[in-house]
Amino acid sequence: MKMAKEKKSAKHDFYWTGNNYENLNKLKKLYPTASWDELLKVFSGRNRQAISHIAYAHGIKRAAQDGWNNLLDDTIKNSFEASQNPKLTTNNRGVLKLKLINEINRIAAKNNLRPKKWNTILKHAHELGLSWGASEEAPQNGDPPAKNLWDTDVILAYLIDKRNAKALERHFGEPISEIEKKLPQKIGSHELVSYRAAGGQHVYFYREKTQTRGEIQLRIHTTILPTDENGQVDDGSLLVKFPNDLDWRQIRIISLAEAYIGSPLHEEKRFADYLALAKQTYHYFIIGGGLFSLPPKGKVDDKYEYLLNLQDAVKARLLPIAHKILWAQQGCTERQIERIFNFDPLADVCKELGIPYFRRPVLAVVTWKTHTFSFYAIHGVTTAKQLGSMINAVAKLLNQFDKVDFVVMPHMRAGMKNVIPRRVRDRTHFRIVDKNQRLVIPPSFRKYAGSEEEYKGQSPSARGSCAMILFPDGDCGYSD
Image (cartoon, rainbow, N blue to C red; front, side):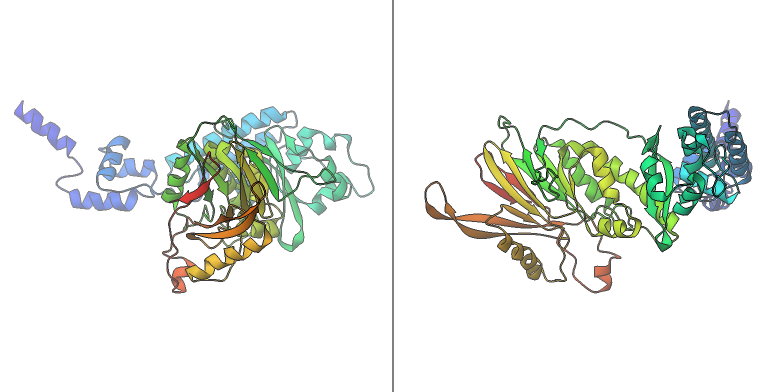
């Protein structure tokens, strides 16, 4: 029995005792990047679970790699060739594509490669000289377009690849202004996307819409968007009504801005802690812009693909609290993205989540318990670096109004607040009274280490949070 135990113990410690140092070095070198086939070959006395356990015990982690291998390429070629069958319907091709994505990611996981999304697979297939779907012959100059060119299956098969405006005009035989009117915005689970590429040329393609996991919870407040004399919605004001019978001690409104999601400087944990405040029933949010980071340097197509993926990530972050976001507005990064690519990713996210979105400063009125609370929210801009000078930039806005309860300007990332009273006439009692106006600079979710401020020798910005508080008696204030 004793010999059996010793033998079992020796087998258990096979690679990790006598030659422990040598094998740990091998593990540290191979485990992060090697495929499981390679690992199981080197450590033949251990299974996958045992190797993972030893690596975890020594703090060694897997690091998925970019790239492709021959097995992935062969799988792509087979599926893309099968998609060329003209007898396949859109649904058949959808099933084929789903199987391809699953198989690609199964192979990628086994070989320690990063997961591949459909647009990444499609781009690599183009590099291999492959195209998806049944191809249609483009009409010759002067010839009428084929009757089936406007069939949705044919459109989707043609525009699953990116096409510029000139290619569309050659294909359909019509000017791009007419083609834009005829192209359906959605075909099945795909939606039409267009952006301005280098040189001002517009690019069009159908992108499979990412399925939103979960549902938007019911809102207890009502939003009214005023219209002008022509019946057009005013892009700068709104009314938010909370039920008068809402028996809460207070309503707290928190500004989310300057998060730069996707940037290495984004403070992930701190931002998540703010989102977690939505668990309190009386906590609500406004979005002051700057949620998106600018894409990294590279080709225009790569930048656009980055923004589409980032858009899905931001939507997933905001979905659980969408019913508690009163409004959102455009920030500097979103404005710059729109100027370059002709689309605003934050606007698309808010449209899908049912959040009122504004490209201009917002003058909002919140009503509760027969009381009104006014807000002026502007993304703002200033070159001030000293804290006092920053708050002065917000104070200048007070001259534009008779009185507002809160002026919110997030651009400066300083996390500051101040109270400036204004003397107004009490219309009921016919006397002069002092009404407090609260100036708020919401904090950012951007790290100081490695930031532009650090390189310029500027002091770290204040990090204090600020919740704007509405009380049922009509008073208001703010609190950390």
